[in-house]
Image 1 (cartoon, rainbow, N blue to C red):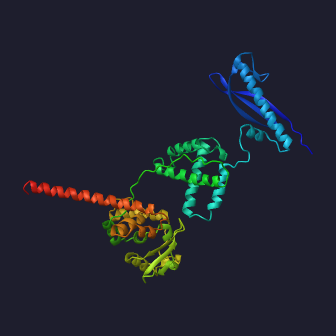
Image 2 (tube, rainbow, N blue to C red; image 1 turned 135 degrees about the vertical axis):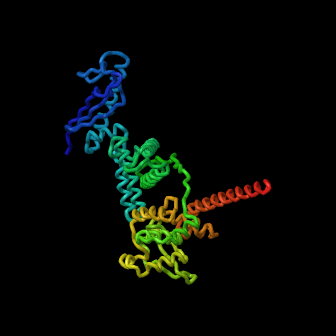
Image 3 (cartoon, helix red, strand yellow; image 1 turned 120 degrees about the horizontal axis):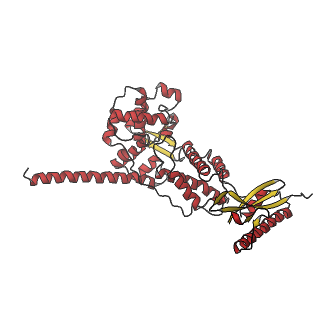
Length: 416
C-alpha cells in the first residue's frame, strides 16, 4: 500500500539577521505538516525580495541569477523527494535536508562513537585511564555546546579544522577552581585521546579517512623531579609523631626502593610475595595501567617496611601488604611531609618512581634495560628519559666541579 505525502517548498529570507541590508535566503521543506529550514548560502538585498511571490523582483541581472538559483534548488529538492518516494522509504523533512546537503544519513555521530568506545574500554583499561578518557569526553561536550552550539556532530564533519578549533578551545579554557588554563602538554594529551577514539572509528570503517592524518602533537620538555640521595636519606630517618604522615612516608619510601606505582601498591597482598631464583624475596605483580607483568627484588629498606606492617592492624583489616590510603590524601599529606623534612620540591607520589629510576638504580650503575624491566615500561624509550636526566645531572655536577677548580687556580695565582 502506497503512502501519500503532502510536500511543499517555500523560499523566504531571514530579515531578523540582516547585515548591510542583506538577508540570508532559505528553503522551507514541509512534509505531512512537519518542516525544516535549509540555508542556501546566498544573501539577497531585502529591497529586492518579493514577499508575495517568494522570489527576487525585477529583471536585473542580480534578480535573474537569484531566481535561476531558486528554480535549481526547487528542482533538486523535488527530485530528492521523488527518488525517496519511488524507493518506498520513510520520507521526513530532515532526511530530504540531509540528502540535499550531501550528508550520509547512515553515518555515525561523535556521541555514538564515544559511547561505543566507553563500552569497549570498560573492562580492558585501568580505572585511571578510563577516568582520563572521561575527562577528555567532558571537554569535547563542552566544546560542542559552547563553540559549535550543538550537542553532537556527524563523524564526517570531523576534519583538521575541527581538531584545530578544539585545540584553541582547550588552550583558552579555564578549568573550574584552577588558577590558570591547562598546560600545553595537557591539551596535547586530550587531543591524543580523541585521536585514539577517532582511530577506532576509522578501523570500524565508520569514517573513510583519518582527520588526524596531518596533525602532529608537540610536547614541551618537562624536568622530571626526583629526590637526591641526601633527601631520600633524610626522609627515611625523619621521625613523624603523627601516624598518618608516618604511613604515607613508608608508602613513598617503599615505592622509591621498588619503583611500584601508587595504584599497584594499594592492591599488593601476600599473594604477590614470591621467592626469586636467587633465593631472596621478590614482588611479583601486574601493572594496572598497562597489564604488564613486573617482578622486583626487595631491597633491604623495602623489606623493613613490609616487616613493619606484617602484623599491623591497618593491614590485617585490608588484607594488603601496606596501609591503604586514598590517592588524594596521600598527595595532600606528602606536602606536609616535605615541609617537615625540609624538601623544597613539589613532592608527589609519582616522584617515588622517578627517584627509583634515577637515584636508586641508574645512578648506581644498574643497566637501563634492567631498570626498564623493573618499572614495567613497554618501551625502552620511556626509560631513556631518566637516562637523560642522569646525564644532565652529571653535566651540572661537572660544571660545578669546574667552577671550584677555577676558584682554586685563581686562589693559587693570587699567591694564596
